[in-house]
Amino acid sequence: MATVKSIAAAVGVSPSVVSAVLHGSKHVRVSESTRERVQRAVDEAGYVPNHAARALRLQRTGVLAMVLPKLENPVYHRLVDGIYDAADAHGYSVLLGDGIRVTSGSLMLQRLVGGGQVDGTLIRPASTMSPGLLAEIRAGGAPIVILDGTSERDHWVAVQDELGAYVATRHLIDKGHERIAYLGQTRYQQERVDGYRRALREAGLPTPDAYVIHSQQGTHDGYEAFPTLLALDQRPTAVLVNNSTTAVGVLAAVSDAGLRMPDDLAMIGYHEIAIAADLRPSLTTLEMPLYELGRVGVELMHAALTGEPVESRTITAPLPRVIERQSTA
Image 1 (cartoon, one colour):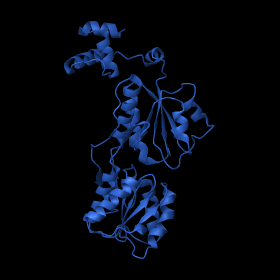
Image 2 (image 1 turned 135 degrees about the vertical axis):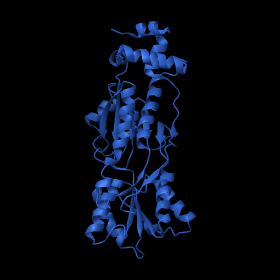
Image 3 (image 1 turned 30 degrees about the vertical axis):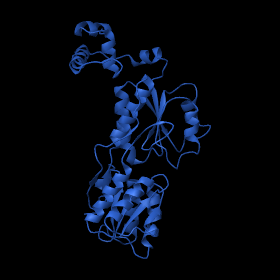
Image 4 (image 1 turned 45 degrees about the vertical axis):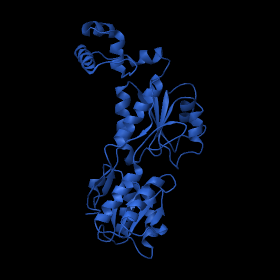
């Protein structure tokens, strides 16, 4: 059976070099050619690292917690894919928690903050989460990585939300719309509102406060918020909805009101979702780099756990892009 030592002997390097390649460590300098030789030898030998033994040796569990606001929200599927792929590459298992249900006294919270049952927590904060949740998780002492936001206390990785909303709003402007509304959360996603307003301002278009309509992020929330948009003195001809799940509710409300999309109202949903192409009319969406967000989040966590430098950052590639479908065509 292949071991780190036997692979090192076959390649002609030290066991520490093989270990560095296997675990992605940056503490040991390894040339690209040596890295390729080691990886080729590992593949040929069919070697599988014993992550459980390594975790025991390092006094870690090999488990990361991931807390998202609403697990049923289809917006998060690409984010979760990125987290799982990166975690698997580094030998971590992932414990998934719903931010609505992770509350004071819950079993999930006890696992996050006590007993050393997880090595660290990746969390996407939201208004729907229990107040004080983040502080309680911090009290456990394990590293935290904030997903899709910045933090002065924790490691973080973000996307260009202001640019995303700007790109989506510009798309509607380029289609000839001048009265464009924004529907969605405003407190926790101010950058999106800022991007929306910047696009309108640069085009010389009005940005009335009444056109910014607050809503939570569920399908029902979008349906319930639509009458507010409908009742405006100067009804918008287009709307940017800051979550595509909410946009699905708006789409249903438009139909129930006897209106047609995009003839009476064009719409873009923020974030690509799997069902967007199957809706009728199909939903134009703004695709953000959520897979990369999840992947980089795990990379930051891995760096924190292995003592490597942690560089919190905003993801700048790929850029936000509009996927046009019938709701704006």
